[in-house]
Amino acid sequence: MPKIPRIVSQERPTTVPGMRVSPESMTQETRAIGQFAQTVAQVGGAISQVGIAFQNKLTDAEITSQYNLSKGKYKEELELLREKQVIDRKTDWEDVKKDADEYKKGINVKTDAILKQPKARQAFDVFKKEYDLSFDKESFNRTNSNRVAAVKAQTTSSMKLAIQLRDPDMAREAMEGAIESGAYDAKAGSSNLELALIAIEDGIDEDNYQDVWKVAREAPDKDTADTIIRGAELSAEQEKSLLSTSNSHFLGLEAKAAKEEEEAKETDRASLWDKEKEGTLTYGDIEATGLEQGEKRREADRLDRRNKALADGKVDPYTVQNDAIYGNMSELVSLHPEATSDRKIWDLHGEGLSTDNCKLLVKEWKSKTEDPVKAQAAKRAHSSLKSMKSAGIFGEDEEAEITWGKKANALDNYLSDNPDASNEDITTYLEGLVSEEKSNYFGEILDAYWNQLTFGLVGGINEVFPKKTTEYEKTATNPETGDKMGWDGEKWQKID
Image: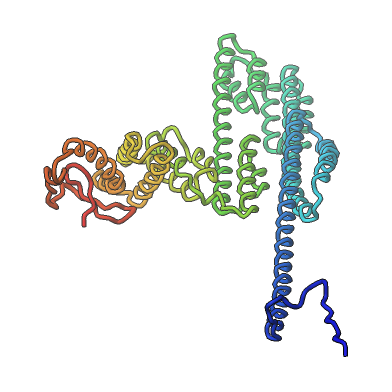
């Protein structure tokens, strides 16, 4: 019977010459192939998950970018409208609101082109609603102020003319119209009208010189007062005297009003600072203040930076201390308190000074302005610290600035926690604070000197100058490390 030839697949040989493949190894091979396939599937799944996570990151970045761009564009365009409104000085709110709504339609076209992600649009709509409310409130207040100022100016002109013409009816009509419009309240308007009628009907003359000034000084403004004075039948010398008195009087009133306005602004700033510290400050809070537009923009920009940092998952800048910036402000507060203020300190809030930094520096600044004796003690300590930095004890360049700022912060905290510390206490604390740096600094100088002096001598410097006893002239504690330090007459050393 003929031998039947064995058919072998051309795709994959089942045997290798000289080798025998056992059923067991075939099973292992099959199992290995299955495991490899499973691994590939798992890796594929992992890659898929990475891809999804990456896409989510891209989407989040896109949402954030679109929101920030549209918000920035909206605020930029509304700022241009605000500047236009200030220049126009319009007095009709309905007209101003209509113009603003039309203007905003143009801005919306620009922001719509940016906002493609629904979540970005949703976040922008929330921002826009709040910002619009604060902007419209400010516009209304400005328009109303313009209207009141215009009515008062017109009323003043009418009253002046009525006094010159001796026309009481004209004065009454002018003031009644002003009261009806809301430019004057009933009490103030009636008082001003009464003064004008006295000047018109009584025909003030040189026989009642004091009455002229009694009426004129109660006038709503200097122009009206001067009109009353000139309308009276006074001698040239009396008129000149009263006009001079009127000028001084109303300049004083203006100064008083300016002071009250600044005090109101300081109250507003304090309110903003409190909310900054608490983390509750909003754009609406800023707009509601009586601050100038430039100052409002600066506050809003700082709030923008903080909100952006938090939105990007970064550290809250209100908690971050830049040591170099702290050192410079601490120096200003301690060495030149007259050249700074709590406002200048808080201007750096979130831009190098943390909330705690600002509180500490303001406290120290106030203590130095209130107690000159303590101020001098702190001034000497900070002056010494600055001299050490200049001498290079804290290193060079940026490293020195950082170390110096940290030391200044530690010194300020000590002064704050120990308000009754004596000059000796402060000096001892400062020596302990810088003992390690001073020891290293003077040690390097002495080593360099004595190494050259004793070069080649057996035993070196320790044999020529044996170690001193452990008796120290003075001791201090390094507040940063807790180490006990001693001054041996040449340098600070750690005491074992």
